[in-house]
Image (cartoon, rainbow, N blue to C red; front, side):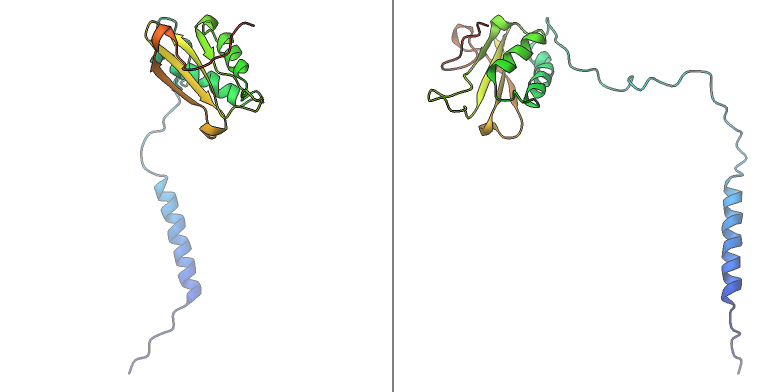
Length: 164
């Protein structure tokens, strides 16, 4: 009866190590030519980034919604997040027409903070950009394009005078 010869674990480890090194060296020898860098400048990192939203005076309300949303989000991120005047001022500074705006009061008739405030910009002859913020709307501002109401209004109910 033959007895198997004991295997040497050390030889096995050395053999595996030699095979791994050989494979690594051969992987680098593909026979392909070296590629030298071209003299052309690398593409600009901003070339693939989308353009920041901007006011499109001749565009539709839908065209201007991303810019409206951006301005609303900036105010929402500030300590003035529940101030109607802050939204009107920021939208005016961004180029929207103050004369086309409406805003609800940010305090109730008994001087409590409003559960939500709304503000709008009438756009053209038939549309409105509308925003709503406050505790009742959750963690994010809500914005939309809606049709104008009668007499060119965007918001229903009592709105504050924008006379500052």
